[in-house]
Length: 595
Image (cartoon, rainbow, N blue to C red; front, side):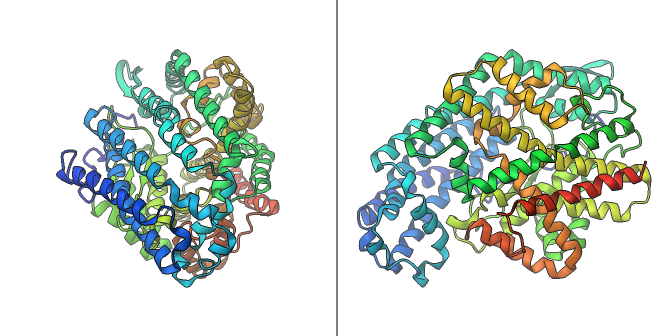
């Protein structure tokens, strides 16, 4: 199925009226004006006074902060969703820039709040410690106090916030706009066809190896053609990140994300090391797949190739029904939450020339349901992506009783519901499928999803760690970065896959390493965590579900170790991660049994 085939997704567009009624809604100006007035009152009421407040008064300060910020978060979400749906919409982009600037300005004015809370003496803080009024804010306050040593002075923090608009954030936005603007001409079925990056990358799943390989050459050539700009942007973003690391006193660049995630350095390194050890599983699998494909020269362009007898494709309604039925087999509430996303027009599904590639779930505040963006081309993998993003949506809806400060899950736990939902879908498929060819397709897709979410993200993390280290010692050329990335590809795939030259440029096409450095290990963390949790569900049955829902409903209201412990996971133990890898071996064994 080519990206041009009608899938039924063409009319599935989201309705953002829960947020605002279009880009000219007068409520936009009202929201911006109100925020400006509220922040002035907030500063007047609380600046320099936190130590003198009672616990009840500090609780009111938190609530005032949320009343001020929530409408801006919703406006920011509205602008972001509009630009994602149409990256060429200048009005939406202008609004997004304006809201970013407003949020930056307000954050600047409110920076005193956490700084005062962090700098408060133990004697002054004693009346807040353990106060029942502040129970719902206990963890954010703990984090603020714990990380006080990384804070700068109020004036320095304000300068960093202001400078980010024209430094790191400006460079990140330029990268996003540049790469989103890439349009391609590709010969398919005897004629030249216009495609965006998402459509071209979907050809990695084309049955013809010539199409797959040509598509990836065309795709990465565009990034190579823009190497001057992209390499400069990456060097600048990394250097800016390193400067802030040094200013704040973090041990290493990745320490910034580890601190944000409230994870010990040793735990994260154990995750990276254990995953790297298991690259042998990746190599074992791709040798099997090369055999299934009948390829003697398997390349990276072939790693997502469909099997000869794999399903041809799905229309949108069939995919939707499969996902909802699978969720229903797990839990009725999960199914109900997912169904509401479609019933309330909170999903945007078609591929369009100027739409942002990939898929995501967006949630801003606890009182509003989330939105999901897809680029649905009808592949089996797109069905899995639908389940993944709806899992995120369910996670957000289960956190609807949290406050704004604790609503969004800590990054390492943010992927739990999404990946778990994929596994529910896969299990639903496998239990009902008797055809060997279809089973092979399901198993290969699931294994490839696992490797993409764990081992591939681990490879990105290792690349980032090395790249940041090198760039902080001196700017790196595009050739330097390509060579470094190629070495990581070799570590992961060994001799199971041929590394063609164009894939050395893949680093330049990975948005996360530009937008949020060291974000990607959270995918690996969440994925391996889910492998263990899903095995636990298979063993415990329905008794597991209430614990799992409690886990998801916690948001970021406690330490990740405490939240994981609710379902019996010890994330600080390297052996826990090794146990989770056994599930992967089981899937590979199951695949081998079909040969």
